[in-house]
Image 1 (tube, helix red, strand yellow):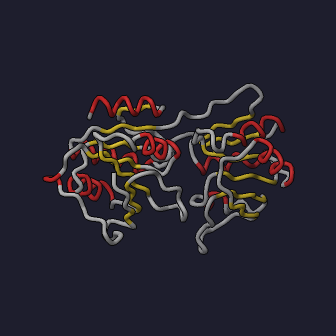
Image 2 (cartoon, rainbow, N blue to C red; image 1 turned 135 degrees about the vertical axis):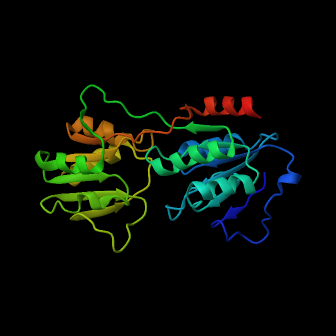
Image 3 (tube, rainbow, N blue to C red; image 1 turned 45 degrees about the vertical axis):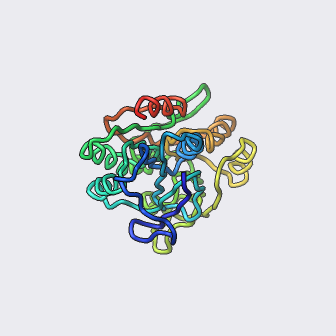
Length: 271
């Protein structure tokens, strides 16, 4: 596999030549990535001589961890843009390994694959489930999560990323610790509090220390699953803190697996 990085659909690094479908010698796989699962899948396919692999990143993180192999960065322009890309690039297989809360791109991928007549697989990490001692309040969305904070204390730990902080900006009687990888936009409406720029994985000791140091009363989290940020769940359990857990949005009706091994088996059946 060649290594090439595309900045967006129209601007590519010098020296990268778009492959011709007529010259294609092997099936082409497009991984919609941005997650640990996508990175691990790309790495596992490095030695697959029977498959050409490209990973696409949305470009929302300023300094993303680039997966192995060919990478493109940027959006597609909705369903029509993705269909055009699949056909132009001669893509034969599509794996959606985006974040569980990236509902729009997952829906676009399912529709585009159907239109283009391509096999599609969703590789999604299992959701977290509450354990003994957990104080979870499950909610369907951010607006409901904000309403749940009325009786949970004055100091809230927001671990929802940087793009949806506006849902809590109207709560002027609360103080928020907001953790994210990249800072929010300068004009973004923000709650009162402090921004903490950190990238996981985090240890339980780190999370416990953070919760104690900032005197956190409750946590707001998305049920993204995975191990990189799961330590906060155990730390909250140990300290008896409630977690307002935003459950995942509905997923498209496509074949879905939760492990790398299952994704590789699916590819073997389609190559």
